[in-house]
Image 1 (cartoon, rainbow, N blue to C red):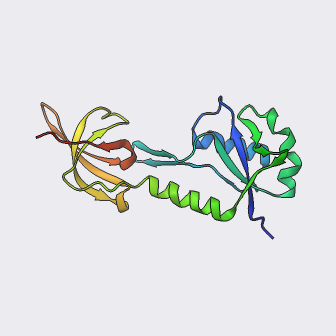
Image 2 (image 1 turned 120 degrees about the vertical axis):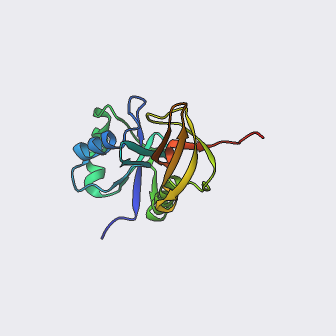
Image 3 (image 1 turned 60 degrees about the horizontal axis):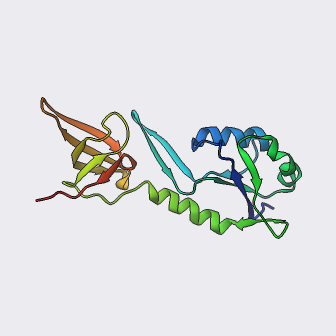
Length: 170
């Protein structure tokens, strides 16, 4: 029977917010069979990376006897401080909580931006430029943006996590 409980592990300050680096560290410590949830979305979309951090500084590992056995050694890994404790007892959350966090993370990468909206690009090669939304794709995960430059117009597909909507003053 699969456990319904998940351990809450605190990441050290030296840990990056790079999903792959955290995942590799979890796998190298707990093994390939460990079930974990990192509350960071990381997806390559063309030349851009769509990234959303739901909760910084924590990861969740399914609570099993084999995981409990090696938890005392986790401090040897620079990336982790260890499990959260309260009253001398390791704290856990249930699978419903993890499911809820996964749904929140999935919805955090979608934005309700309307066609015609003005946006500022906050990440990537077009950072700090503004543009107009021409199209919305993948249920609000991607946008097609028209960027006006002095010499040309650029049409660029971007993840919605790379833009923020701006007010247009009239």
